[in-house]
Image (cartoon, rainbow, N blue to C red):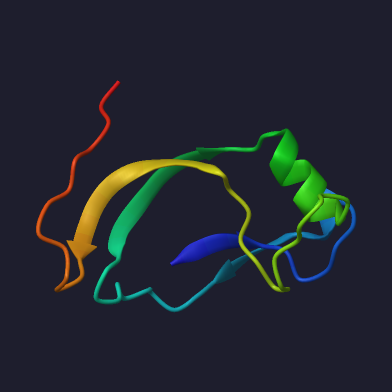
Length: 84
């Protein structure tokens, strides 16, 4: 999968587009194939390293993903999607 990856906190220009291994859902996970995501204020704070709680580096920003369910873990029996 291709993703924007933040390897160090700072300017957004430091983020890179990288190829990452395709994820596999765990038992209680739903894997969504992301089609689009917004860059919002919280994302810019996290990338810059100024948000109140920060993810460990490296990380992939994107708090508002939109996509389709690609696969589900064995512990998932129902899934309700929000459709706008």
